[in-house]
Length: 370
Length: 152
Image (cartoon, rainbow over all chains, first blue to last red; front, top):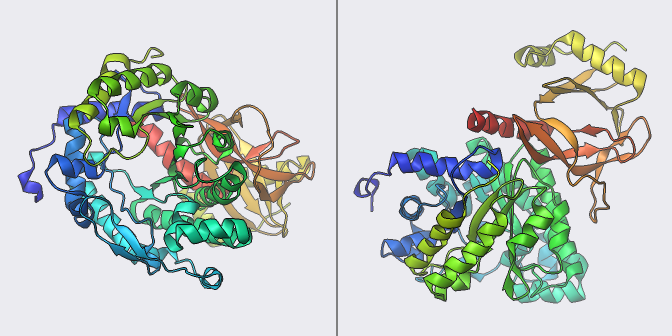
């Protein structure tokens, strides 16, 4: 749908939502904690479109996301994250899928020799590449049509996410055992790529918010030493380089998956004045917000989560109960709190479940420290 | 120590409201007290001057002023309060001229307009002195603008 077919965004809502959203970083009082269910292709389902349509139409995708934010009364930010995490820029082939994000079908690195010969693209080349041109189409639309919902976000993933889009995940995991130095090289290159991508966004929009952390490098797939070596250390180096290059200032550490054994190391990850830490799971269970606040509350903004499986397949009452527990444990975290989901809101999650998440924040998320 | 200032840098000083005399004083203080960072590779130093609402830095060689930058956020100390061991290569390119220790890149708490949050600092592990790099000063400038807008 072109822009003219959408109802206008309610400006009073936008002003209130903007105030809720900025509270975690600037300590400016507002009524309650904000909710960010990480809406991406879920927005498309509200408009009876599918995930494939969402990723092929970035300008329309951002409109759907912004209107979904108003519908649910959540963080007023036009998220759009292109889904292949940079593979295509380096020669990977992708397949557009109807009901899920684009999938990589052919990767540029196949052998150890390919790793040695692999060259990271410069900032200006990345800015012209398929990932950022798609991403910028969405961001430009947001900036033009929804200027108060614009944030210059760059979806970086972590070094292992980038590495496993350049080389097949089974090869990278085999090399971790047989030739770990090769994976070191790959992760250093992934980190350098992340720095250049951040610079590209900062140069275009004057600032950037980097989404990084660790999804593949979680306790279910890797041991703590591997996570430290191939994820925490190269990601930390990359973030430090980004900040030293004058890019930033937003950093969002998205630690998806199980981080029982490695979450403590992220306390020393480089941070800026606008840093969020989100941890998905503690073993098989959702990461308790009480534990997140205990370890990160005196450092940065804590992003407490509700299990995405519950949002997808649970009842509204189950979502509400878990959200209530998390928000009560986090709402007065010293450096701010956001209630959200463990990862992206599932594409076909029942809207009543997202509503239940927000309702819990409205019913129980009133700040007491202000 | 008399420092040469190129015309280009002189214009930068004027554009940013820095006075030559205060830069010279900052460098003189650093040279006499030894409180400064020195490049591990080369003959470049960073002097720091802290006032109520501005922290200013001068980067200089023995003969020439190379850069000047500043931030409004005030550094309070290490985030988390203690200098714990960090398991990655956080050694910076600078040493503390006073004690000779390599400055570490660590999170430091910074405060501005009543808001305290972390930021990436250069920390002498012995002297309890804190600095920021020129690149980070640019990042902080964006952060300061956001705080000024949102706290107004």
